[in-house]
Image (tube, rainbow, N blue to C red; front, top):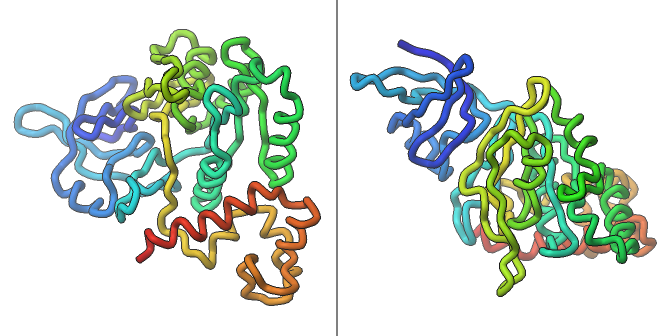
Length: 306
């Protein structure tokens, strides 16, 4: 007997698959592990999979339907393996905080680059805005940086309910990935969007002022009118994979819009005379923090390609 279902939870050993409203506990067939030799997780949340019943009556994932897209990162420092966070996504939302904890802008930029590379529309959720009422200049600067790069930024506070309804409306009928560092309030936001969902939340670690991990495995929850939201484990770092130095700038929309004005067609936007991108940075038309991320990624990620 063979059936098709949607992977809604992946632990690495067992997978929860939704089939006609029923949740099935499944294992994966060994050959699927071999197929994903460069990936730590050959089957991910969001995958459409084909199941067969084995001799013991247990369900086994025997094949994966082609993915239309996915979000991927390097598995660990200096690793050549990849880790796919989720697949078949209509939209990604990255939750960012400027306080308790502070999200590094380079982390945000790396996530956005991956979304650009794999053609996943992305929205930035600036969370815990109730804690930023005395720092309006920081909020305004963040908006200038990322709206200037072409991204939608929504101010939210899951505890106060600010912006939650706007986010909820964006989820209807879509598969949405929710990602970010630990402690930024992803699980709190999911619980606020739909209080009936059993989503664990945690507090901030006082010793390191970083978020404690609350979501252990990626989980897909049904939301609204036929939509799903994928709540992911908190991510500390976001190593890029399969993006070459020469193509990196292609994933910065604000660089793309100016690159045609560069003197040299193969400009790297680092040192060449007549570089329109560098000039835009000097003039403040491209945020320096974004350009700084570009240079850091060029420098830091070279070691991964050796």
